[in-house]
Image 1 (cartoon, one colour):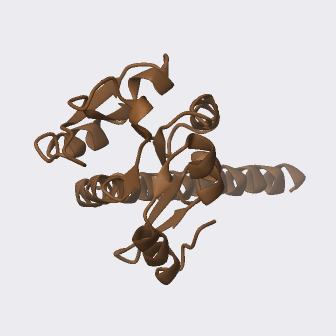
Image 2 (cartoon, one colour):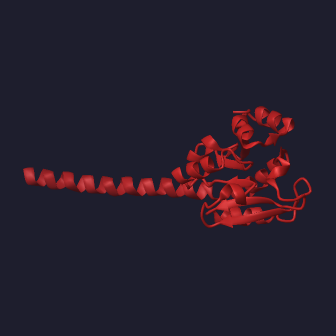
Image 3 (cartoon, helix red, strand yellow):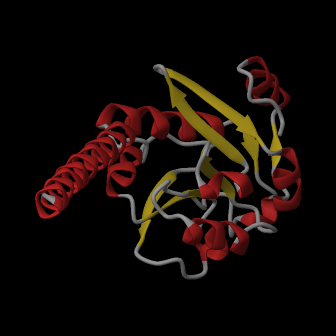
Length: 193
């Protein structure tokens, strides 16, 4: 009898582990699909391009008046592809160039705008710290490790774009954020955090 009860308990535990594992995998997969949908990535790319129009970089950040504004993407192919659609849309009279950075080497000298993927974790924090005092406009996603040190934090919830501006971070970077953008961030509930 004891052996039968032990066998039955073992069976139940095994089935529960399988059910729990399957439920966890489905939740994780659903979150990944949701976070990486093509439409959502395209919206975030458009928001990044639009926000960059309301930011002024110090002249010393560029080699010449013809130097492009370089959007750098580290290991996020969907965002790279989405931003490439803006290659022909200048910002402040400067051409836009989208660069895929295979690794985080000399980001401050190579990038004017940096998007940090929500999937990078601690690496994102390290990348953002490496450009904290450089004129690089950084974007992170609200609720991810990279967001705390980003100048702009973006979120899409219930099909609405939200963003917040970290004015302390933009000041340290030497970037000037338009008052209109700061008011819009405040109106959307993001504010100058």
